[in-house]
Length: 314
Image 1 (spheres, rainbow, N blue to C red):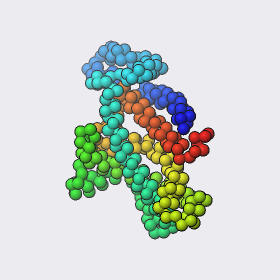
Image 2 (image 1 turned 90 degrees about the vertical axis):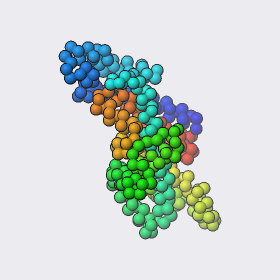
Image 3 (image 1 turned 180 degrees about the vertical axis):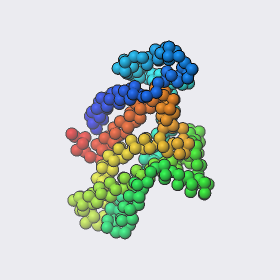
Image 4 (image 1 turned 45 degrees about the horizontal axis):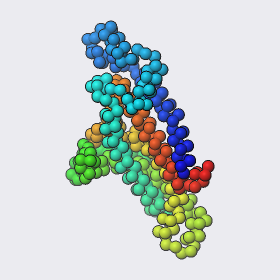
């Protein structure tokens, strides 16, 4: 297992380098100029050129990339061009909010998806199986922001059970935090649940046909024991793999959901940075998101290695 983890970590290095190159390259293609906004509308071309020189924006993109990379390796992502706030601290604060939302959505999607898929597999061909399949298709067709608006309308405005907007830090009030993330978590998690339910159903049907599972059932073991000790572990591998790809969707979908629910996360920070052409923040958001997705894939690989011993030996 340690060999597998070391190999996966080493494989992340070129991926992260490519992400950093892309982030700097994409920012260089922005049509607006940060120096023009900082200097003001009444600034002369000479003043704009001076600001460009002070920020290093007049350098070739590869020189800008090298300067940024050498600083980033030492944990220095620069300062915001608008309010001169340290970028790293600002991104980490917002990242904690977005990750908490994404993790809640992942737990909701994983638990409900595996449960629904397993039930559908055990009742394959029945009315319940068809109902779960239809509901999964409906959930996949609905945008996350639309689900969020419905949840707000029902559970916040009509029933008054949960707050419609806002975010409470976990360290401040755990119960308040849960109340603030449960609705946006469901809005993101329901689509993940629908995707995982399909994969869980297919993999569970296949697992139930495996010789050791059929032998356990023929021996008269309780269904709960057969599913929990034999079939479930075999069926989880493709589900976990799918969950790794869905985590990237959760981080991307959080951009819209955070706006719907008024949550101050990475999505809100990214949209504001793009509007203000705040280059250091844009670069830090892209790289940080890429690192989170890469680490999620690493976690998937490790989990897959635990579930499938053949991967550990390869």
